[in-house]
Image: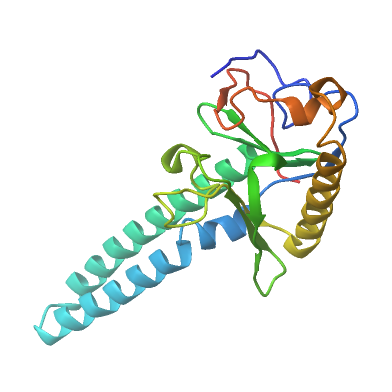
Length: 231
């Protein structure tokens, strides 16, 4: 785990090596993140049902109207507070997260209180998936090769849900997910073809990014307060 004092490139812990270009950069949409990762709608529905049941119970028990109203207002306040906190967290996570796709890797920059960056070279990506929603947003999970892993708790919510034993890093709640998936697929194809063509070459002849073996999945701490707004 290495520390650095600033972001030389937005969303990246260091400058890209020669010959490697940034193909795409974006962030999760906070509204989608609030629905899909923080379950704001489910929490609101839960409190709605709770309020209805409480009101029915009190009315059936002959409670006075004032007591019914006060009890309902109390639950409404709790529900608004809960959904408000979850929505705020979704906004903070969205603003502090940056997804980057380069010619040879995916970089996930995340963290509200303690920003980190995880570098995922294509050579350890076994496959990538895509799940889209009606609004065009979606998720792109990355299946890593055997022996490679990320920490689910540290990476959340930038991981595939409920995959604890072999966590899969994921570009989550991104707008226009199908287009981003195409960009990633093309980058993977190009990098794979280049690696195959250079399979018999000496290490000195390989691109810098393909020879980078420096703890690619170890989060790097970023003490700076560099802004990472959603894109």
